Length: 245
Image: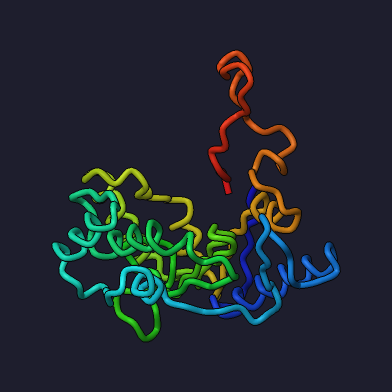
């Protein structure tokens, strides 16, 4: 279950403030405190939350500084060293994202806004105003899981088309997560879009957090379950973890 929104005349920093205020407000309204207990560990949801770049969190976990200028061969070697799978089609931005997701994301228990994602993995996000190759995008991580994804929207239809075409080439090279060209979206951009911040927040994961629920099946009304006859006698259904958020 997703909640998606746009805020006109706003950017990613405005959306960060919106997210931390929204979640801390919900926690206090539902539990009486901005500090909640999830799976036996306390989480402080009071604003402001920590801000940290994606590459800085990778460095915290692997003990080495990396960025977009790191040679691809070195990034691939680091992926191999840390058990991270990669494909030949992955550029430095995608390799950095894979390193982050496999080595650093689960270690973020307290809320953190992970900022500055590469353009290569952020086709809809506005380029960073100060950092070439990066975007004004963040993900919010709480209890080791992504809670939301947000960014300043890219407003230039020509650049957006070029980004989509790059995505198509990446898909043709084997990246199954790459996007297709969205002509309807491009047409809308041509009509004009004011400076805008966009947000997608996983409602199921938010409810899990605020109700101390271990799996997404505990918060979805009609979760998808394995057929009873497929389960071994006396066993519980295995937990595939939160999906669809």
